[in-house]
Amino acid sequence: MATLLYNALTGPGNNSKLNYVISDYLGKGRFTTVFQVREVSTNTLHAVSCFSLISGCNVLNLATELNRIIALEHTNLVKYNDLKLSSALCFIRSEYQDWSVRKQIQTFGKLEESLVKTYVRSIMKGIKYLHLKKMAHGSLNCSNIKIDACGNLRLLKPGNFIHLL
Image (cartoon, rainbow, N blue to C red; front, side, top):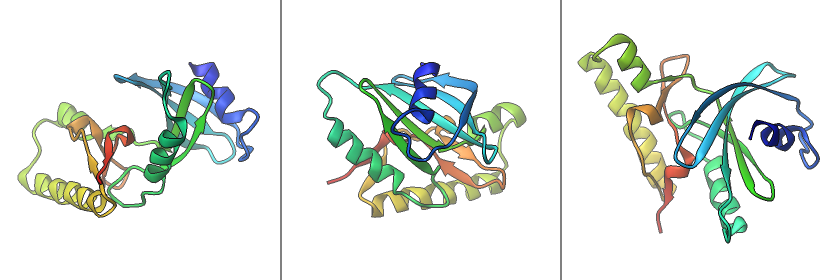
């Protein structure tokens, strides 16, 4: 998977001409494998989610939905930058956020009430924005709520943003 990821990020058809180094394996979900990559020219870290395209999958519909997610811009959402499709795999590059609410609770224990209030406000702002864009988040949990370097909450998991008709 790592070799396929590298080829997708740096190979033919990559019009951005950026060089990446795969720096870490971050984990595996039900459908995706996630790697941390470093953009060599800027030293910026990104997360890249990789998943297999299911046989019979409508790639055009998938690309349309993923491009809707990439177009989302809000302080309380992790930014998804672009996607690459190969014959059997899809790669989504996003901002890298190392810290999650889950990790914070595991490290420091229970959260103070004032912090919980701030977090809930941030989560609701992100959800409100999604709803304005006719989308819903299908999997809110402590692992999918990231905290950036400034302490801002950011919702994660593009595969769980559901288009509302």
